[in-house]
Length: 499
Ligand SMILES: NC(=O)C1=CN([C@@H]2O[C@H](COP(=O)(O)OP(=O)(O)OC[C@H]3O[C@@H](n4cnc5c(N)ncnc54)[C@H](OP(=O)(O)O)[C@@H]3O)[C@@H](O)[C@H]2O)[C@@H](O)CC1
Ligand SMILES: [K+]
Image (cartoon, rainbow, N blue to C red; front, side, top):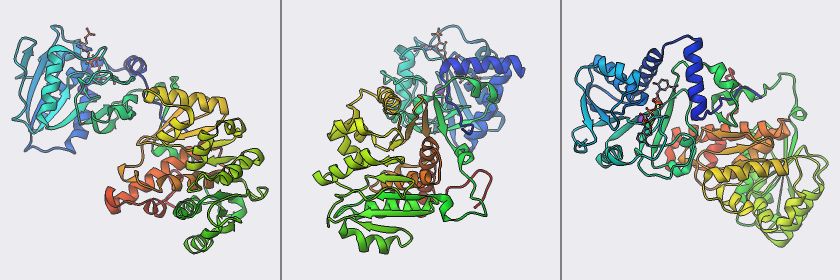
């Protein structure tokens, strides 16, 4: 497995902090300065000297960062007002040093009136960071409410104040709609849909923490980012179509041939050697014209799939896009589960059929990838009260059935058979449109045909499917983005290569 970045919990961030200070070595006040410099560098890209900025600082190290950022922005000639909200009397040591390095700090105590932020263009939120240990109440909660009420452009240092880094918040006393500039790693909480109101966007800045130490820690959560390219296989100059496998797709029904076309085209774009797509009779002309590079098998039935073709020629079978749930299609799927010896990729109605006929679960071959969206997953295993509980069920399902689950969402989460989770960071809201999932099924199926192991096929497929959506959105914008644009923009590139 190529080195994918680990996501750390708060205890691990603290341990990394300490390790870096002891081993770099670097004094904690200098590490804070590095963090503040990194924040400022990122922040400058979003602002300019004409903006009136207020920095709202707390008494811990997050507040210390805020005070250091104030000094650095002032040195750059920015119009910065600094407010220190003393919800507690004692300041952390580094917060105190940074306060002393500043002139003009407005200090508020809990007996003061809640500030009004109307006069500012930008609020930099440095009240609480990763040291939050409880839901915020009382005076600091009122300050957070005032920040939210002001409806200004908000940037948060490290995390939106009030948001716990590793858990799902039960409190709503959290800074809203913030652009978060986070240190070294995004926090797990950024990826939970429960927190979408708090995070407008996030980016990560390197503050110089020890990367080797981070990667040596035990974490079950990994990030899918540009390092995924390191897993992509390099196509040898001396190779032929046989080198890249033969995939079979079982897709389409009357009125849903588009799903078959999209998964077929995406599979072809993944780099597969040969592809056969099996469709009901009504789909023959459609598929042959839309995707001449694929071979086409037709079912006896005009409208939906009823018969399993002979499987022996194929390296992988992808099933589900647009197949519907007719009784005869259910039987066809059952014989696929019984007879296949090759890996399976199951999507959409293939998953819905299994959910509605739970006895089929016992037939699920070990080498399978399932690609449900959240509702399909809930139908399969029952509802969850929140995302963390859903992840638990996802991990248990993967372990129990020895299969990979690609749980599709704004941040798609892949679970391995050994308890790891991989969270995707590519893609955009334009991809929330019909056919995106069909394209993903095609890509993952095509990668397995090329002899990627199942987990790597899911990782590479999900990440580059998202990148294709990002490329498509550059040209079309989010609203006009179609699944066909994802297919058109697929480009699965090995690290360091331009082809
Ligand atoms: N390695 C890194 O990434 C680096 C991190 N750095 C920065 O440090 C930040 C973490 O700093 P931190 O640990 O000092 O905690 P922070 O969030 O400022 O708050 C703690 C204060 O809040 C208080 N408090 C807590 N909860 C409360 C509540 N509900 N209601 C009221 N009070 C509450 C708590 O009081 P206590 O409860 O402990 O008495 C304490 O006084 C991190 O996010 C990053 O910005 C960089 O400087 C350099 C390298
Ligand atoms: K903050």
